[in-house]
Length: 284
Image (cartoon, rainbow, N blue to C red):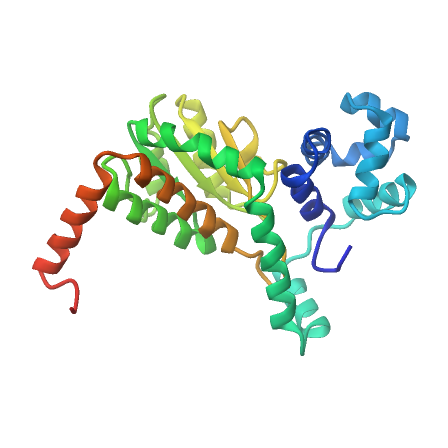
């Protein structure tokens, strides 16, 4: 396992790309990783409801020589706080001074392959028709994820009538999400350290009966709890922030899938383009 690829990153990849048994077990592990630290193979298998052979296979799939090595790494992981952005920047400086581009390209290749796995594609595909049929689609992201939320909302609003503008005013997230209903879908976008505003938005949405589509880094994410759909974004890489390329790709895939199935999207996009051109919004 490379320094740029954490145990949770690998588990997220297995949850998307592994065999059906390993995919299911990986998701359970993401929610119950601390259990590994104090369990035998048989004890862990019993708690997770899997065959002991699956536990051994998982350890090997994650790159360990044995279950004991896996358990030792988990013990270290749960005792060590997640690296902050400053620590990630220090690692980049010390370990990739002359190889940053190569490390980044390798990580993006792996992330893209994971995102394009059959399991994640099935999840994204299952979101298309419900998004088209929702009364309202709210998209929430702050700080680095605001760009993704804004893009999804802006382009979505260009093609579809049910997208709501991303809240920007102080207190706007609560104001807007408190209007959600059971006919709505809220798309939450966040990753570790997990933005408090986005976590709260998803909790408000669920209390209103709305469905939450969580675009996040793990099934263990707080916005994945009780979510209608979870897209576990592969975000590994040497950058001092987790990579957001897979988040942009996932959003593009949702938009493309929706436009391909919509009877009105092409006309709405054409009308939008004509209006902007008429009033000088385009230079050519």
